[in-house]
Image (tube, rainbow, N blue to C red):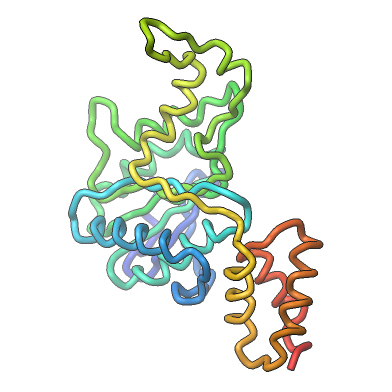
Length: 257
């Protein structure tokens, strides 16, 4: 049902469209390149290794990229596709609200010769939402094992993907000297635990932020002035990150010499 209109030999990515109950090929990909990303070299190396193992048919993990906003999580996924698309990597973006369709999507691509990453951006669940149950099934299977040519890569600002409340911790108990987490905490942690590779992202320290600025303004000679304005901009935005550096570039590109 979902992949009949997609020529995977010609297109490396598609997005699930709810109104048509099917996939639409993505024709204009974000061109961000792997070498353009700054300050996340450790995360790049670990994600690349896992993806290369996946493409080679070796054991590999589902991946959760979690942490502060604007620190490069989504950009890293986009750059990953641009880097490995020619090696057989294909990507399907699925919104959180459409995860109930995930088993059908996976069924329709499980026999394809390509290696698929299901991409869920800004993934998190509120109390009472049930979409995570379909995700759990795809991550670890039920009676049927998940297909070997599909992995889930998700980004989130939450480490455990679920809301966490102080009252949940108060319901934990100590029995026989051992801490027994409350059922609510077990539920919160159980979903994130299904992502075998978890990469954390934090706000940039000052030197890393300025390295990102320098990479975006390679022709500028007056670094002192550039850095002064870049730090003022970061302060006005409430934090230093790759996103902040990109926004500074869009606003001031061409203004410094």
